[in-house]
Length: 78
Image 1 (cartoon, one colour):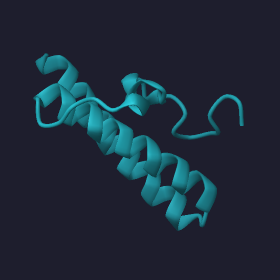
Image 2 (spheres, one colour):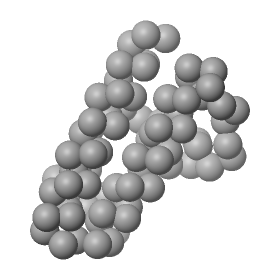
Image 3 (cartoon, one colour):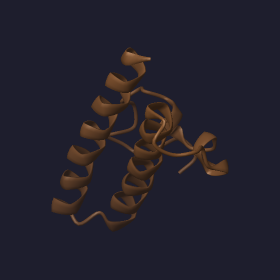
């Protein structure tokens, strides 16, 4: 479980950095997408810690993955 928490925390840090970059470049659509992913990742962290119950949309987003892919370019399907 510890490894999963660390991976989620690292992903949240990466997403915050990507959000700051998108804001600086005035990429509002990308900022919104990244912020939504950050919220899903934060919720996954809270669920793993036992601080909240899983929500139905938790499994639908890329936050369940701890991969940093997609931070420098558009997500697949865009």
